[in-house]
Every structure is written in structure tokens, then in C-alpha cells.
Length: 357
Image (tube, helix red, strand yellow):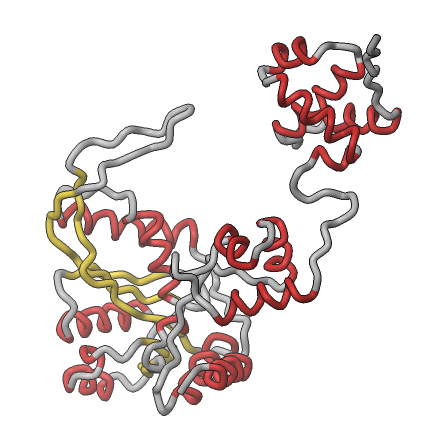
């Protein structure tokens, strides 16, 4: 006559499982497995446990057998604290070679599943190798190395303004955000609620565009703004005059800006000659990242425009002006640049060496 083996948890394992169940960060999967084993230890049948925990009898037997064969570490079927799976040097070299030197036919980049299939190993092994060598095929960064012949001089100049601004002077980072659209959704959106994220229609109606000139004060983080219909030398000159009036007359004015043709017309040059306290500092070509006001424009996009609904250009203008005022009253803080020019130039040189000619 066959006898039924009585299931018993190891005393330390039982204490560990109970400690897991008291944790507020325990995953649902691990919690269910712990309850299965504790219930088995108490003498409950697999049928009773399956009904009580809303799982199948097969699941109960699966975790019972895994515990009996591999111990408590086997309950976590991802990163286990027990004996690790062996990954030999040949496998590591193969995965690294495929990752860096080949592109799969099935996709533009490697995924864990694709690499596991091509290398003939498990997905867990792929993850471990990529994690160890900090390889992330699913991520990509954009970059552009400037071909400006005066790149180094301009970087040193602008970074110097950020890190060691001249005395008795105001440093402003200036740019324009063009073609800001007054977009109205075709239907009202659904508001945020419990168990429901806010939503809006994917399509929209256009009601015209506006442009925003912004001058970002490095020392205070405050912004001088002006909304215009267009972005020509005429509008730029009007904004310069506003900026000039906003800065105390006893201070020099250093303005960082890009190489837009509207910034270099004969009218602008004539105005500069008549205002000797104003100094332009042009960023290198293809180097908008060095202009501090670009970070403020990103905030504007995220906080005021991305979810904004505007039925007219007038509404859009009012929101742009409101955001500038709110930023100056609530969010403004001094701009801090931490990377010295020599580190930037060294990084660019390293990039040039590894890029194909």
C-alpha cells in the first residue's frame, strides 16, 4: 500500500517565508508561492490551496516540487541567490561580438529574445552579459559634431560666461521658439479619475501659429519674453530693445545666441554699434545644447504646450505670457553649468577619433 509523503518546510525557510509575507514590497508572484508552501506545511491539500488562492493544482505542485528539488531560492525564478548559472568565456565573446558588430535581419537592433535565439543561449544569460558589460541595444542617443572652425574658441567663451561671468554685467541666453501652433482638440478629453488616466483625442484643429522670443538670465533664472507673429530681423530688433530696457543702464549686457541669419543683418549690426554695452556671443554651429535657454524651452513644451488646448492665437499668446510670469514668480532659479570647457573639447576629440571619416 502506497504511503503519502508528508510535506514539511525547513524551520528557517518557514520563518523566511513568513517574513516575506510581512513585507510591503513583496511581489504578488512571490507572495502566492510563499502562501502555497505554508499551506502545504499546515497540511492543506493541493485542491484546497488552489481554490483558496485562485490558482490551479498544477501551480501548487509546480512550486512544491521546485522547493523540494532546489530549495527556497528557487521560488524567485529570475535572479536567484543560490548557485548562479554558468556562462563560459566563449558565450560571452559570442554575445559581445554579435551585439557590437552585427545587426539582426529581423530588426534594426538586438532584443533579448533575438540575441538568445542567435547565440543559442537563454534570455537570462543574455541579460546577465549585457548587464555586466553595460550594453543597451534598445537605447540610442542623438549627436552632431560641429564643423565650426571656431568651435573650441566659442565653447571656451560661452562656458566661461556660465562659470565665471564678468563683473557688473548681465549674461542672457537668448533664442526664439518659432511656429508654436494653437491646437484645439476635435473632441473634449476625459479627465483624470481613480483607475482612469486623463485622455484627449489624437487629432486636432489648427488655429494659427505664434513665436516666442526668450532671454534667460543666467544669474537669476528669470526670463524676458515677447510673443510675435513672425521671426524676422524686425521682430528680433524689437525684442533686443525690450531686453536692453529691462537691464540696468550701468551694467554690460552679454547675450548668448545662435547663428540665425536674422541675428546678423545690417540693422542688427547698426543697433549694436549704437549700444556698445551689448555684446553678442554666438554658439558654435550645430551646438544648440550649449545654449541654456533651450532647457527652459523644454520646460515650456512639457508644462504649457503639450497638453494645452487653444482655440485661437490670442489664447496661445495669453498662455505663453502666463507661463513666463509664473516661471519668474515661482520656478526661476540660477543656472549652474558644471562641465569645464576642456572636458567638453576632450570628449569631442575622442568622438572624432572613433567615428569613421
